[in-house]
Length: 305
Ligand code: BGC
View: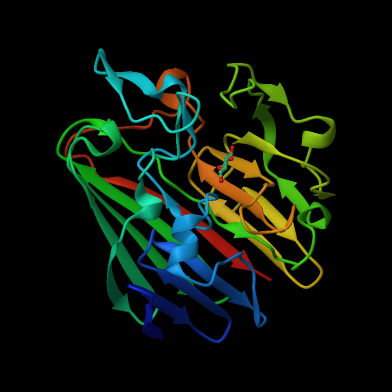
């Protein structure tokens, strides 16, 4: 069933069945609740004002481009394009006033699904093309799926993510047990831009077998190529009373342990399925280019046990 209520000036939609409850607000198409076994498993703030005042993109949809673009510039069809910088001359998470701060339009699709739609005009944060993005949150028995779709009237970039912070145990996320279907990660420079190297997931970065998160991370893990992403989880996160499996057709996942504005250290774990950071300037990785008229589609699915 779907329940609609006010969330300050915005709306909040709660989709639930016997196993799972998911709430999403029209502010940023942000996840505020993922309740499994009666506990919220994501971090949330109490009001839209707090979401707007805080700086951690808490559980919002990130767009048009998730993560960083070096010097906020890239070449598209041979032309150098500048987008709006918002961090040390780079662009982070789509620019200063991006999808996470916008009011999305909601539509109830059925008892199990709500669609959120955002129109992003030509030139928005420097990006070409009138773009319509939709994000569908749909639930099923003991899980939910986020489907990203978009279309633009000019060639542009589109590479969103969900910035959910998981607190599956309600305690220090360094104690959560993680398994990652990843054999490589991207080292970064002091501006958190990938250096261009790929490193084997060894030592602290090796989650090929279940292991405690252990410490600080703000790194992109490349998902193993060749795994069937509909049946093999990209990662599994286990707390005392729950296991979450994440499935996705994005090629990588950024793992970020905080700091998180408004919370204690290590209160949540962001696991952001996405293309690799700075990919507009990194040939050889999945391209974030969305061609005019092309239909964009990606998914992220969570299953709880
Ligand atoms: C990035 C971090 C950044 C954080 C902001 C994450 O996706 O990887 O570098 O500080 O978002 O909330």
